[in-house]
Image (cartoon, rainbow, N blue to C red; front, side):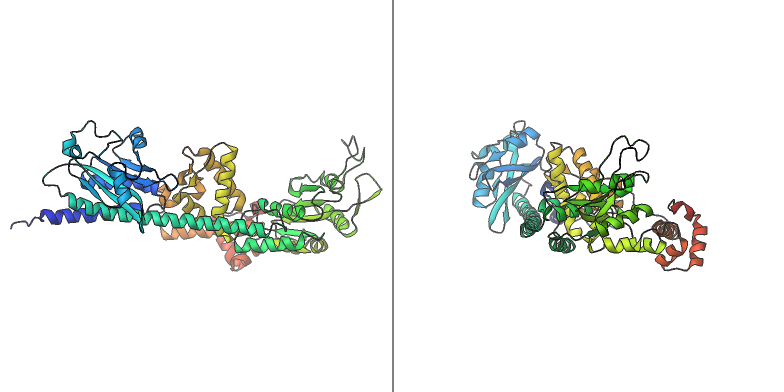
Length: 520
């Protein structure tokens, strides 16, 4: 039986459809034209058999036409390929918005060969096709190819194919512009919001214009004018200290000291001395009298970070300061009066600590006069790009490595990550990526392994279902035990299961709850 072979025209149409499908897939990979322009030209080279190809764009500020991407040209040849509207064939296409076909470049006086790429070729054997790239009614660039001249070559069909590709490129440019406009709008909204809140707190301290952050700004504006005690709640890394700064520097105490104390970092043996000071000879090593942090903050604000880590004895003395605004130095009987505003912060569950007896209820009520909750980054995802841009600019300047953009794959990774370390973790990730960048771009592969997706790292999981379920169950139980400080009953309640079932699951996975208990 004879095999029916496709007609040459059908073959060409199939090839064109295949090329257009492949080009559309390439354009979908990234919103950045520079990331996809050269792959598009590579596809055209494969399907058209072209020797050279260029995608040129018009600089809207200077009007100059320059090569954005090329196939078959060296870096120096690309740099030489610059034109003004009306200059050469490319300039004529941009000026008129009409495609130009040059069957033999040796017969065309306007063909400048400014790149010098055809010096090694017989110009009578080279055809040149150039089509405009239009965005609405405006020509924004041109797409051109070289191919060997031949009687069997249909240049008109090539023009039709290139015109379709130019239209696809124009749509990609339009989408990129919309994304840039949206980013600019977000930045403008953020700037406007900062300006509106300028008389309420220092806008340079905090980045974000999401709804949860606007609620924080409103609370700051309400409390900063008073001397009310403020308790800032939120997970680690959310920016609680920045909120404390904003409250202090917009209060009437702004010109007075702002003293910070990390309660978790102070050893138990010296925490009282650090807070309230000591007299000479009060304990071994006390060679001279020393003022404490409360005394140093007189007239201003003291910021007690990680307040939930204070010892029971220190909590009692702090309660007296909050109630009476007086204290004694260690080793002294003289009572000192102090005028100080207290701002405290914690990432601990103080209510649970009260139930457990590790935090005083009366101190809690003294501190929790005006609570401000700083939302975790996963609840303000619209701020992630603003923060990433801010940190990229900050560390780019600090390291003399200006960052021009964050790539689309990197943006996807930033937006899909759950950010357990919140803004602090995001800042560290961007700082690392800026330091590793070699082309002024934050790429996805420069981000830490924790942000890498299975697709990007080629590590897609293919395990059995039961194994996966056991792994997830084990992780959930461990996380619940961590939060409950090893208390199985409390962890069971958090997971919504019975204590008996919790015991069975702990035994099944070989988990030792004792390793999660807090030493005390």
